[in-house]
Amino acid sequence: MSTSNREYSQFLIIDDDPGIAKFLVTYLRQRGHTCHALTDGFQTASWLSEHDCEVAIVDLRMPKVDGISLISFMREMNPSLPIVVFTGVGYDEEQMHAALHAGANGYVSKNLPIEQLYCVLARVLATCQERKRGGVSNGQPALAGAA
Image (cartoon, rainbow, N blue to C red):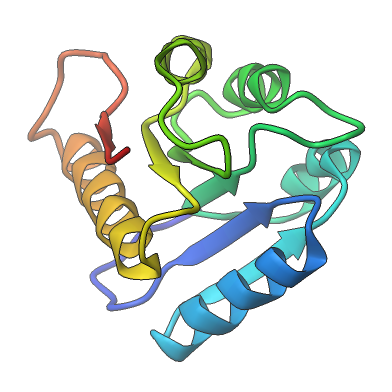
């Protein structure tokens, strides 16, 4: 996966609610990005093995797959993939810490305006791109978020 100096990015959205997934895809495409949505977390491994993405957006509460476990799995598959949690749980400190401990780079509530998610996505992506260029080298995941 290459992240050249372009204005758009490739996003992967994993959310069991097709309406939310479609909304996010539409919003991000209107902003000039490419994105794909999965409504079943079990599809993640096969999708990631065949495609590149620069940021993954993961719902925490899905019926078939626990979001925390999915984040840990994704982190094992690709240690440098930026992962942002987008959840309807609101600000749940225990869930937030569990997601960050599992490897998430940011945490945003679905109750906030979509622009808030976009700001977090932009910060996480910029921090990760800076790290790839060598500007940040502490080995820790880039953290960004909003309750």
